Length: 315
Image 1: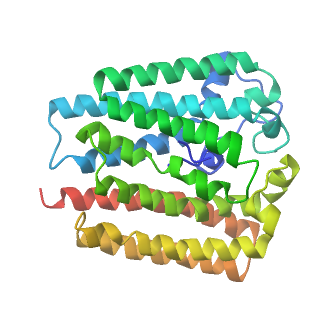
Image 2: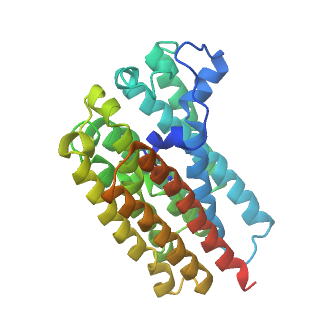
């Protein structure tokens, strides 16, 4: 899911969400709802659900379905809490960026204490649901993901290094692992392969966004790769990471986790992603970077959907 979230929270504007105008005033409940970055959280929960479904051989029974439902609610709440905490920490940064200046914390419509209490309540509720109705392993992994994103990435890495999204991508890649742990009570190699795919996907996905938002990041004083190393260097790295990503997506087939349906899908989708990356490398435009970014989201969703179709094909 890449601020990837508990996966790429900076991706919110490309998921089809309508961004309020700078002069619009949201109702109080919509202000709190906006803090949760709902479009990003939806992608996180989607990836977690894929992990849950792949962890169960065949169709889930009633008890497994209830466990999955509780896990979805718990993961959603903790992911939303992490998003709200991110808005709190980056209040002044958000205020300097056109894309985020509308957020309630950036505009001062919600105070820091209100955002903090809201985040704490969501996190506490989510952790309680996971501990009581799912399992303790999922609860601790979800808490670790919260800390990885909200503290390690947002507070430490993001303002310090242009490799922030590469290192911090580990927390954003965790949703399938959380889903798998919810159903199996263990972290197994298959779950880590799903995590690896999102981890490798995050840099080209996020840097495509950073390329056409470079002025925003420079204005905010954030050392994103296009700001520190320039456009051409970033485009090359988008291409190189996309090549690595495509190679990594073959691993579920090699390991025996998936079959030919997934492999064919991974190769076709990978060729399409590479096509965007090569075009971006050869002839840059903001519009092409925007298209690459948007395709990267569709790519991840279709990849996981292909895994799911492959999983149920033999039932």
